[in-house]
Image (cartoon, rainbow, N blue to C red; front, side):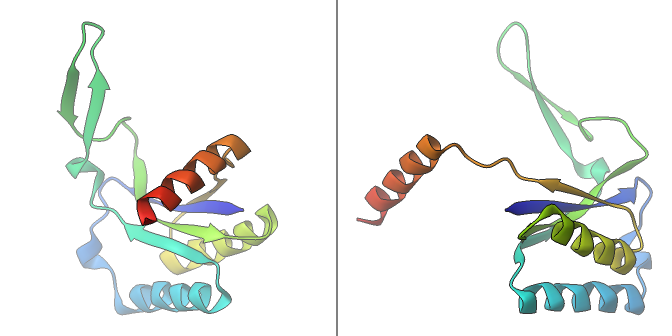
Length: 130
């Protein structure tokens, strides 16, 4: 099962103020995730103020606006995608992420693709590999 572990940071978060101990703790966590074979992907995001939101217009076409999708005091600042055996295991990693990042995290399981979608994907990948 794959899980998203998303780090929530305040809107006014300034990454230039991160200290060496924070960076070491996050690096150590990443190394532990790699060693345990659970880390699939990791990414840090630029601040929410640099986000763009795209909405479809009722009259057709699209409109692109500056800023995040929702107005909030916190936004996702980075994330891990983990391969875990259970929600409990993902929550254990989420707890470690909360400590390392010194910020709240959200843990959510990815929806599993229906078998017919997996079959179509496998066929498309096999065709592309030829």
